[in-house]
Image 1 (cartoon, rainbow, N blue to C red):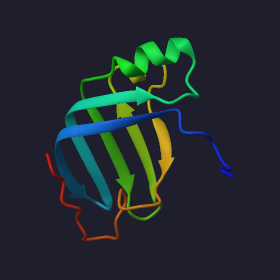
Image 2 (cartoon, rainbow, N blue to C red):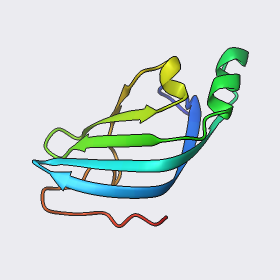
Image 3 (tube, one colour):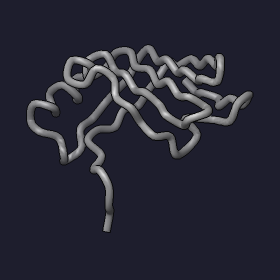
Image 4 (cartoon, rainbow, N blue to C red):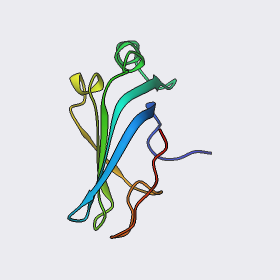
Length: 100
């Protein structure tokens, strides 16, 4: 049995670059492809499934808090917070290779 907040959508990011500065990791991607899950409303499906442009993920290494932004989705959700639980946020002075 799954618990917690349901996954509303999923994005695949391409053509990405990464910078690390002052304890913050920023990943900027030129292209994104997003798809809604079964939990999306009809209106949200239209917006999310048409998402295909820039996206970014900014993570604080000290707090493990991340903010996600995607251009088309920002019409509905300007920027939203994520809690890092994998390699999105890394310890200070570490980097994560990004494949494009």
